[in-house]
Structures are given as structure tokens and as C-alpha cells.
Image (cartoon, rainbow, N blue to C red):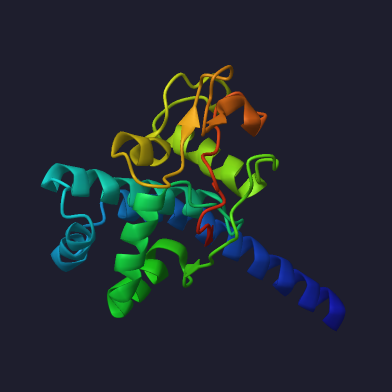
Length: 203
């Protein structure tokens, strides 16, 4: 009898937890999409990249929102960071330790650690964490990952801003040069620039 009661209570706790998680996720995604980064964080990124205009800085931080969005959608699975310039913005955000901690608690219910990786060499297979970043970045802007004809912002910024050693992605599978063809994702839409493992976040 006691075992039956405990089993029922355990099932109830699990179901309640799942319901709470599912109901909270849309609010967290909205919170991420509308998050106002502290002006000091943007100013610090501008110091690191003095040639950037104010509009370019805003685009970079929108890319960071897009990355955090992918992390939330991944439900704890790792999502690789596909952009060097967005990774720079993430570093600046982390330095505002209290604000970053509060953001993580509200956005993910946990602290989102920044886990550097060794990247991947040009002849390596594309890691699942990067495919995951591509999939959720496409879905966020209403593109089917397998049918995408343009790069989501998060994957386009390094090339757009000509970031030295930036991660490059291309739909041109014949003359892809120093980038990766989107077909390397095995999902018809996404590739990895040199060393695209980057500083993938453990999200």
C-alpha cells in the first residue's frame, strides 16, 4: 500500500514538473528575445571592435539573443557557438557576473556555462551541437533547416562583418574555399566555417 502511494506521488511530481517546464518555456523564449543588454556590455564590445557602428553592435547582440534562444530550445543539449563575433559579445556579457547570473536563472533555470572547445578541423564531420545551432536558428526565423536559401543572422555575422578568422558558411558546394558547404550538416542547410566548433556553449 505504501509503495503504491509513493509511486503515485512520484508520478504526480514528474507530471507536475513537466507541465511547469512546458508552460514556462514560451515565457523564457520571449524573455530572451526581448532582453535589453546593459549599455556597458555594448560599450565594451565597441571598445574591442572600434570600427563597428552602433547598428552593427546591435546586430551582434541580436545574434547573441538568437544563440541563447537556440540554447533554450535545446533543452539541455549542447549548442555550439557558430560565430566568433557573437562569442566576443557573450564574453562581455559574462563579465557582468550578477546580471549574467540573473539572466541565466530566468532564461534557463540554471547557469549557462561557456565551455571552450578545440574547434574542428576542415576534414572533420560537423558536430551535432553545431547542427543543433543551425536547426534552431533556422526555425527561429521561420526557415526549414533543410530548405534554407539564406543564412540565419547568427551564421552570417562573421562573414558580413569580415571578422578575422571568423567562421564562414556557404551554399556554394563547388567552390566553398575556406568555408564549409551547407550540405556538410547533412540536413540541407548549414555549414561550418573554419574551426566552427568555436567556443560552443554548454547549453
